[in-house]
Image: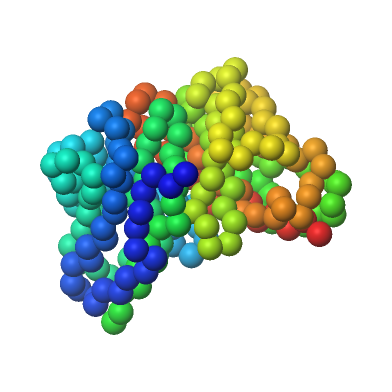
Length: 108
Length: 113
């Protein structure tokens, strides 16, 4: 049972902002939204997480809508190294539920 | 500080053979996890251990057993491998303190013929 919905793929020009959307319409009040990415077939890498406030760190920004039914991950200045599959995950209890993610291709 | 390590990196088994995948972490984390990732799919949780001495089933536990040997190590055993278990297996750990981040190992690629 999918808890998140993401576009299958996206392209972004190098140096531009990449905005990756995610729908999580069934999210509960105490469930966090996490973003991870997976480059080639490596282990997933943590990017950012949030509950209801917008968050920013050195890698990205996370914008969560007021109703918490959707969020957007923003990579402010995409580089070729940001080409990866990006997973939006809702954490329920001890379990992360991964979907199929968005395959982001950064184009030179 | 190696983070999460997994052995072996790659393994080929015949149907019916058994094997154990090893995972260790050096971050003093309380919680550890085993996932599998099939081609073109996201990760699915097989088993997890919230703390030393405890284990719980995830989404896809059938055909697997786990052992939390100590705080550092969490192993995954396939007693009788099947072709459907051909996958990439990832181990992860977290500090188990609530909104914790999971840190992943490099994966074990398993092919069952």
